[in-house]
Image (cartoon, rainbow, N blue to C red; front, side):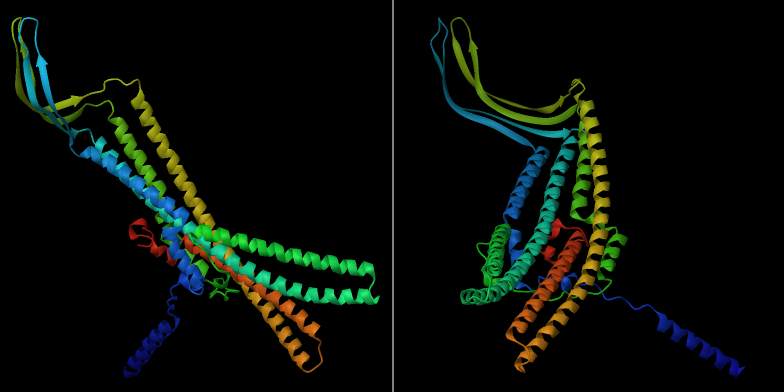
Length: 464
């Protein structure tokens, strides 16, 4: 019996140990910031933060926010009492043919207060429409900032590419200028034919044009970036020559997209919420339309001080009288030429339109996420290959430099190796930029981009 007990104990111990060995390891949470260029490129991060307040696009959106708030307040005002009145100082001279003139002089006034009491919920529905419109504009503000961030990142990385390209072309042009001077000497010495020299001249002119073209594009791209970001200027020195290889794990894009789809995050992003609010507005519009042919009741009260005139054939008299009234008034539109029917049908049609628009948006968003996820994974593979090419080119350059030190290679061979390395470095940079751009698009679509935390908390619901 004791042996069986020990055997059973060992069996349970082995099972528990085995379970511990095969228990799944909790995957490390994905940090979107690790694969964004903002942390490394301080100038870009600073620009993205400042663009929220000073970009021309965001300034327009801020004005739209103010307009939406005014519209909300205007619709809310119908819930409150409406007070109106007037006051005047007057001298009234009245007389008949057979009577002396009667003079009335003093201050006279009229004040009225009116409060909606029962409008079948139409007043409250109209106020709610205004509140929803403000939320819509807030979500549109957030969406505009997301798109602006993506565009600014892409443009700044494009500036880095263009600067590197300009450096490569300038170095190649410098080598070409040296060779061109040698060809000029050969032509003068009669050791180079005129036809061959013309080919050399054409090549150097094309190289000069290429550098000038790149320089022009570089300046134009910088002007566009400065204007879009709302900057006053951006010096060339603040734009780096390169950007390091992005940190990447093979499954990070797929994991992030899968988590988003599993939590149905698509319905929580501002673009979807805008359409959802529009559907709600259509429902409220239908509720308002149904009340157009129903009686509406308001409370009212007023006070009035005015001259009361009494006239006979032989006399005229004026007396200041005060009139105070209060009560309940009903206004009822009995027939409006089928305008109510049209309003209800329009509200229902608008609701169907926005419901279909929401479905189209969700389908398109899911497709975009799937596509960008695939493109991110492919871009990561391309980065790995380009980095291997760059390492090979770096080895070739080091070998040529060492051979030149030993006197076994000419300066021309070193220069050619340098050109080859520069080309490989530019290709690697382009692939890094492509990965940065795809990842930026993905975290933007999923609304997990850390820079979006600069938005007011009330503008975002996703991830909460």
